[in-house]
Amino acid sequence: MKYTIQVTINTPVEECFKLLDDHENMKHWQEGLVSYEHISGDPGKVNAKMKLNYKFGKRKMSLIETITFKEKNKAFHFNFDAKGMHNIQQNFFEAIDNNTTQWTSVNEFVPTNFAMRMMALLMPKAFRKQSEKYLTDFKNFAENGTSLAK
Image (cartoon, rainbow, N blue to C red; front, side, top):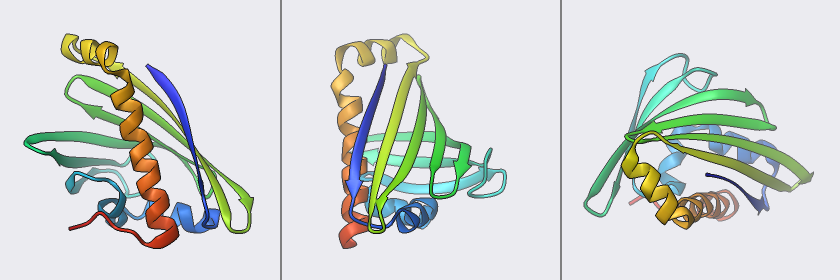
């Protein structure tokens, strides 16, 4: 399953990239994030790995984030691996003008077990909806300082 989403952020591209690159900011725009821990590699560099822990209601989920490509103010790509799912995410940033950024996120979900294959078939909109929510929440954080942190 593959899809592309975009959001226009009324913040300079340099600031957007800086906010996205700082893991301390994730709690402000990734609802459900409980904690993260560095596993290997140089933090923030290509091949660095982090474990991200989420809680959605009573459901807990952990995933491993691997940075696969990074070009300052232009692109930031990740692989995310969780039980039953491999997610390839390519993020592209374009300065529309001095104060506006276009974020394009290309997402591909590859189920690695039967249960997740069925979930992807039966609920494909849930994946896209969650991705759109993260981009919208990041936009609100970058533009207004709106935080989801409790």
